[in-house]
Image 1: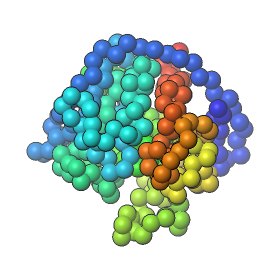
Image 2: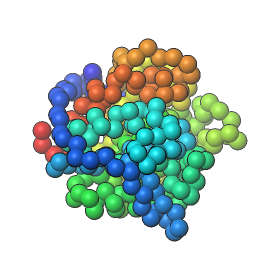
Image 3: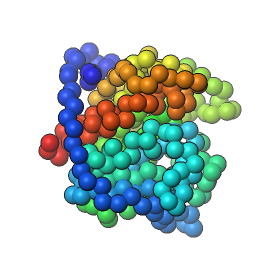
Image 4: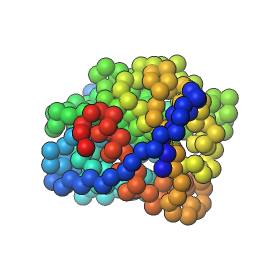
Amino acid sequence: MIRYLLAVCLSLVAISVSAQSTRIKSETVETIPSRGEHTQTFIFICVDKPRATLLLFPGNKGAFGIFPNGSAQFDMFFVFRARKLLAEQGFNVMVLDAPSEWGARGIWEKQRSPEFAAHNAAAIAYARKQADVPVILMGGSVGAIAAAGVATQLKDNGADALILLSPWMPPKDKWPIPSFVFSSDFAISSWPDLAAIKGPILLIHHLDDNCNFSLPDYVPSMVKALSAARTPDVIGLRGGAVPSGNPCYPSGLNNFTGMELEIAELVGNWIRKSLGLGT
């Protein structure tokens, strides 16, 4: 595994992985007031002596369909599969469903709206009330758009770091679907407000990803755009389960099937190092 910083003539730097394990105290489903009469539901995993809290955003339309027992209608996305492994790295974890304002319709094209930011401001406030530790936004695929959107909207009142997994990152002029289906304005690399993102940024992608929205060829332009805030760390990986079906679906390489533990450990080490949380 190599950590490399692209688009700025940087050297290759090895990143080590070491297992950390923390006891999970509880896993509950919580619903909190978030914007007006609307609410935000999430799975909350609490650990002993958390070092940080991760807010996890799923892919697709952002609606898991979380049930009261902690299961979900759509549980195939990476952040759902890896939630407990991430918690065992020493972090409280919140897996966010779509706010009640949109429900099962999801958050398509809401990711950069003030309304979506308000819902997530409430989630961040909840996280900080539970533990006075750094808060990190982490999203996969379309969920990366949600995480980045919150990071640009909330700015100083938001999170302490941002992690993007196989983000949808085509340059605007290479957006692969018609704008009337899903606007090319949501191509992260073309956003004018990326400089507002605070804290360290990590981008993880699969070097063999063949989803038209997260191709490795798009990484340099994405890194250049994010560098308006700060140069992100970039980790390119190979391996995992044999992909099947649509390359942009959860069974594709951009959802890292079979790599859950590896990525949880990478994320844990990166957070501890980047935020100075010790080993």
